[in-house]
Amino acid sequence: MTPRRLFKLSIAYPLEAIAVALCHYGLKTISLDRSSDVGGAVLRTLGPLYRPLQGLALSNLAKAFPEKSLTEHQEIAYWMWDNLGRIVAEYSHLDTFASMQDSSRVAVIGAEHVEAAREDGLPGLFLAAHYANWEIAALSVIKRNLPLTQIYKAANNPFVNYMVRRAQRHVTRALIPKSATGAKHLLRAMSQQAHIMMMVDQRMDNGIAIPFFGRPAMTASAIGRLALRYQCPLIPTQVIRFKGTSQFEVRFFKPLDLPQHGTMEERLRALMTDVNHCIETWVRERPDLWLWIHSRWGKEPC
Image (tube, rainbow, N blue to C red):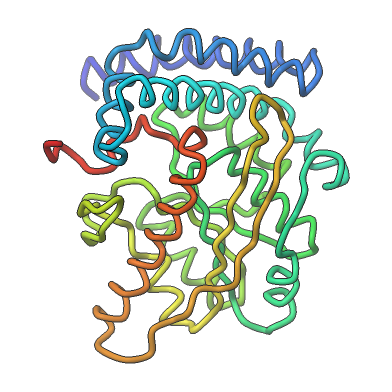
């Protein structure tokens, strides 16, 4: 083990985990609405001051919306930080979301697509993105009596990762990590007619180049390969946050059409183009709800 790794595991990661735990349990002592307000206020104040991520957000916004001014980009980034702060705070109250009736916090449109997936005797896939609060999307599926497995990316800090996974158990205990071992579990789950939710809006260097906001973006293609292999529904799932609140609207859309002609790679490229177009449509509708602090296009110049 390198000295750097040893320092992280023995000092840096535990200290970070203690800070996260204090915030988590502190937020649990106050109401969901108050927690969300505090999280939003903290990150929309401090986030823009962190130059590396604020600079990345503004660079991404310039690529996606060249027609908008710098002031407009800064406004979108400001509310992106607010949304992200609210998501972080709301993790402390996932049990509250899980126990309440949808109608009190979450309006649902297109629930018939979930019900159809529950009854069709096939495995199924739900397409989501790092948009609004994505945990609400999974909860809205599960509350319709459809067991759901989520794919997740483990946090670098193993102690923080444990805390996040523990919070997610209020949503679902069926979690599969992004890894070689996880891929085997995923295929096994699909063969057993499981329903999987995946977020495919972040760059994957060994993915395929698919247009996103008119620029090639390396895109994870596993969701498309699974849909084509199992000929199962691929249901786009969008979550909208009502600005400045912990109130949401979840939209389940008609399953995407699966291309039936051409080679496997041609069909996959066509399907993933539809996937990216779907996510781009959501982002254009409410750009403040998407996570702009990810290097979606890599180091491609503007």
